Image (cartoon, one colour):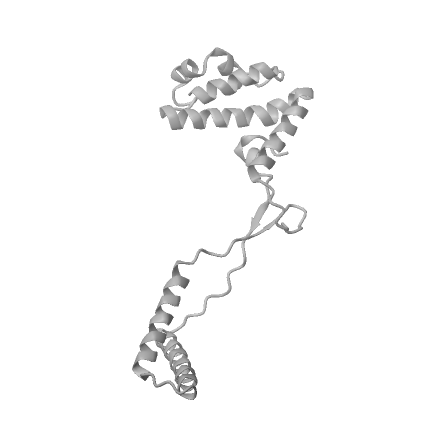
Length: 191
């Protein structure tokens, strides 16, 4: 496990592997227009040939206008299409097979395991749990009150209360009891 910080909370989830972008070729605007005109012309020939073979008399101008409009709609839809979903891979190199693993559930499970191990290992608690708890506290103070523990210690201590303040600043402490951790979380939620 990495040494504290929000990275240890969220850092061990499945990594997103971005597709390598292909080298971008410069396409000329005239080439793009010519390809689309050729596509509309070929489709017009096919539609008119099919309609005439079926003994239907249809205006070529109508067919060209309909196919050009359809092509414009398709181009517009292609422009607003969301980007393709990134391929996911776990740390072992295997790909995600769509098992539906919830990232939040995985993060909570990692935290449960870290807290269980930290209950028996005070060094693990002070190395992994306390720094993340301190970061979360600073972030909550920053979002709700516009301060951090470093920027306005007196106000932060007043908002957090002495037990949580002492826990965050005494790195040599033992792992607190579950009810103490619960009270710290309650304080953070009330901020």
